[in-house]
Image (cartoon, rainbow, N blue to C red; front, side, top):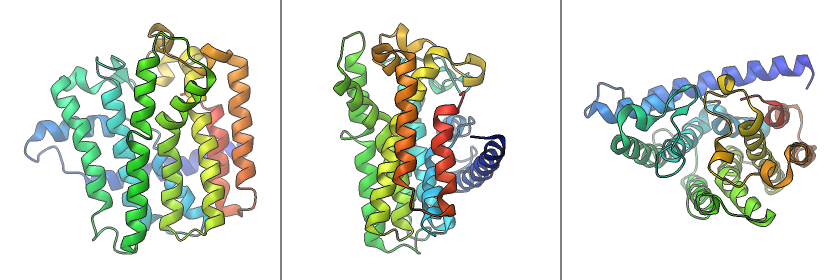
Length: 302
């Protein structure tokens, strides 16, 4: 991207992050609600400075098909709750055993493993409570909302994020082939990103062709995002990333750089971005944020 596009994207991401953060703050109980420990733990991780890629993709997808972001905002926020729950649980000693996340001590290091587990459980549960809150989603036909909730549940469960994480954990220290690596990436990261884009489009009245194109875009972007994460874990700046680098190699995790090398992995991510852009070539200027986000995925430094 050129400097003008970079500035436009920074402005767009900053504004959408603000909208999402303000909504999350409204939707979640404060730290003074009993029992305060769970709300403190939930808010500690939720407001730790994440990029909000999934909710922003949901909002951008809605905009791309002429939708109103206020209509999809509760679902966009629910997607961030699900993502944050997964990070809290990933960081636990039984899985990745990470001490830092986004430049801060991980949840279990601050609140203990028991509260961290419960905070993750609470976030996942609250996501579905939020999406099914009729007074927040009254503008959406119930059958359409049910379709979206069903799709997100599948993406977060054992055919999506959980399934990818299972294979990832079981593959540590082993030699695996590209098909296994593809399975891990497309489910652990890609499934929820696809659901994020689909949700925004579905809730905004997207037609079948639009939904197919956006789903293809999201699949490529989600895959590229995880490859970029793998590369950053090898050569990223620890200070910018807010967590240790090299941890994947230390744990014997299977990654694209480990299997294909850095340059081949970087080229694969670039190819996926081009494929994503091709998928939405027929959309008008309202899809420009989606185009910029796709390019940002492989150019980011954290």
